Length: 436
Image (cartoon, rainbow, N blue to C red; front, top):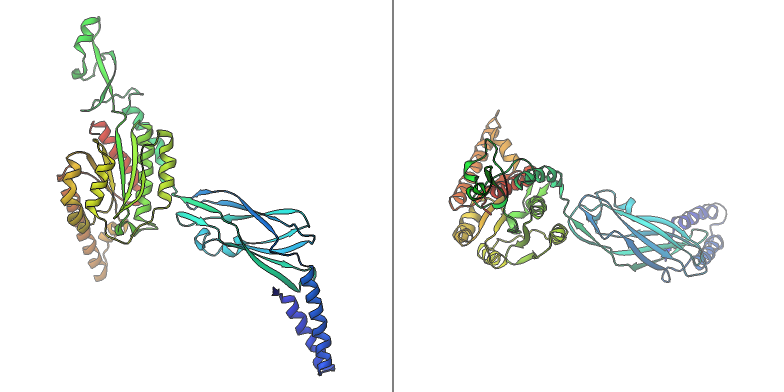
């Protein structure tokens, strides 16, 4: 039950004549008694809230920072007209800041025995599952003096997926892949590439590609054409430890790594390679294995949606052991982690030979563009000290990357905006060289 502002206003207005003409109990009960009777009648005529039927429908998934619509159907089985205000409660991160009140509150009128629909527009600001909270309905009488109020639990979950902003780079990367794959006039020869077909020799072809046996069987010189290897295994390893929680610009490092991993997965699946995913810190947070090419990207996006950074140090030995179990045969292991000196030197470097002796390892890390900007700062003492600190941080980062390269690791270090494209380029370079 709830007393409305209209009832309070009428009570205040009724006290004026009581105070002016009859300040006794008679005037008081005359005014407020009449108002109490009106409120009781209004309450009796308001449609009951507990008997209402509520069901949901609408979107069950949405990409981060995009809109999702969830429809709530309200059925009024009573014999009274429902005049109501409704609040559809969701977690605060379901809307942009400051828009919650407008988006979650609705007015509706439902005649007896009928149903009406209201739509809540969500625009989530964080990945993961957003679950609906209670639906609170306040049913008013015809006079608007008194209201019935109650809540219903109507479960619904909207999964907020990674935004995959790097998909804009996919067409250009696929064009390069088609060149490597021999579908255009540009043909490549790599150390580990596969034989594709024979064609007639033209001036400028590499003489090492001449097939002398085929040439002997025909009147023209025949050369072999090659294509990059297919059906190679790629394991994407997301480090979800404490370093992945750091924010670079407007996004956590983990989100930038996910975006890069999605672009690489889309590219590799088009190239005919098999892609798996492992998210790990001290235990497995997500694992995707054995998906067909058409199902790889949806499976990865769905698995990544609920992965959040953990404020614990990553167990490098456990990560290595899990990666070796997940990829028993020779594979390309793409490790998306931080290039911070301490975690690399104390955690990864001692166990790195276990990976490199069996697999090709590519490490991708998110760099902070603000540090590069700081190195150019001048003008006062504080700016000079900031530039010196930034230069020292860059030097340590380069030294760590060089240590990894000496162990045979390909290192990609780029800003959040450039990481996905740089990682895809590194994959294509490895494929061109036949190192997968």
